[in-house]
Image (cartoon, rainbow, N blue to C red):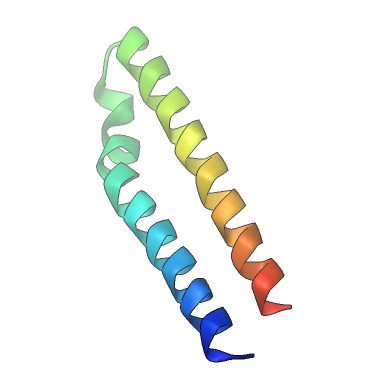
Length: 64
């Protein structure tokens, strides 16, 4: 693997980590919210999870 691929994987993984960090509090506090807020939080977590999965797939593709 060349340096450009390693740098891309590093950037993708960093972005994954940032998304996880940004949404960790939301995930941990969703159960204490009202029903409407809880649904909105779960929707936001689903979007973040989708983004994380796509970024991880991109990193896997580069690593192959």
